Length: 165
Image: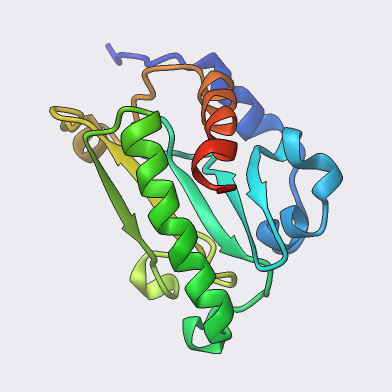
């Protein structure tokens, strides 16, 4: 007998509308849809968007508007801005969201593990003591302990205090 892990909130991800082309370029060029696309912040250089397939609750990404798969192709101004947003994001997650730690990182290229290799993005992942377990490794399943929309709204409320300084 097979055990079944039922996660009805994931149906939208599986059955929802598919975006043609680069999903990050779609988000970049559709500011009017920020709420439905779960954008937390945007400016002239970058945007911050929730990860629809998060490692932990509150996982989001900082993404330059420029479509490139090469970090070295970004202007210094844009890269420094991404770095500044990363610092502010870590503070937001620790002080505002209660994370005990934060993983940040980029997978540059498919070989390096990038799920969307054609458009660079920086992952910002909140972590808590004892938040790891083996189900991801052996069960090929992620456990998301709370509602995605509630987390989006909670972090969105923190953006003016921590990001838009």
